[in-house]
Length: 143
Length: 156
Image: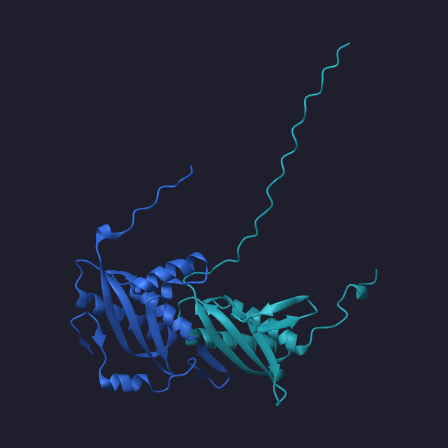
C-alpha cells in the first residue's frame, strides 16, 4: 500500500490548524482546567480531517485576512487576567512555531467558569467481565 | 455601609450610584492583542466559595433557595456554590449580595465583616474586578441540633 493512500485526502486548513494549536496551547497553561463549548454548545470548530469537533474554540477570518481566535476556558481559582495573558502569549508562540504568526489576529479569552480542581472526564465504565458458563457435570457413563 | 437590626447591610447612596454604572454582560479587558472576558457566573461562584470559607457561615441562601437547590442538585442542574449569591458585574467593578445562615453563637457583625473582607479579597485577587460593595443579609440562625437525622438505609 503506498504511503499516500494513508495520508488524509484533505490537508487541514489554516483555520483548523490555528484552532488546534490554540486549544493545545491554552490547555497546557497551568491554571486552565479545560475548555467548554458553553451551554448552547456553539463555541466549537469542526476538524473534518481528524473527524472530530474541537470544543471551546472558534476561529473566524476577518476582513483584514487575519483569523480571530476565541477561546472559552474553565479555570482554576487563580488570577484570571494573568492567566488569560499567558494563554495569549502561548497561542502567539505556537502560531509562530507553526508558521502561522502572520495569519493570527486577536486572541480573545473568555473565562466561562472556575472549578476548585481539575475535573477529569468521566471514566467510561468497562463492561463487566462475563463469567464463563458453569460446566455441567458430564453424565457418568455406566458400562 | 451600615448594619441594620436584621443583620443585613445597607448600601450608601453613593455606592449604589457606582454600582449601577457600567453594568454589562461581562468584564472585557482589551490587551491590544485580544480581549479577556470573565463571565458573571465566575464572579458568582468565587463570591459563594469565599463566603463559605468564613468560620461561622453555615450555609448560603434562604430557606426556599436551599430547598430548591437541593432538588436541582439531585437532578444535576444546580450548583450549591451559587445559591444565595447575586452579583452585578460591570466592566471594572462588581457588587455582591449574599444571603447567609449563621451558626448560633457566632457574632453576626464579626461574621458579616469577615465575609465582606474575604469576598473582596478573593474577587479582586482572582478576577481583577474592584468590589464596590458586599451586602450581607443574615436570614437564619443554625442550631447544632437542627440538622435532619439521616434516614437509615432500607436495604443492606
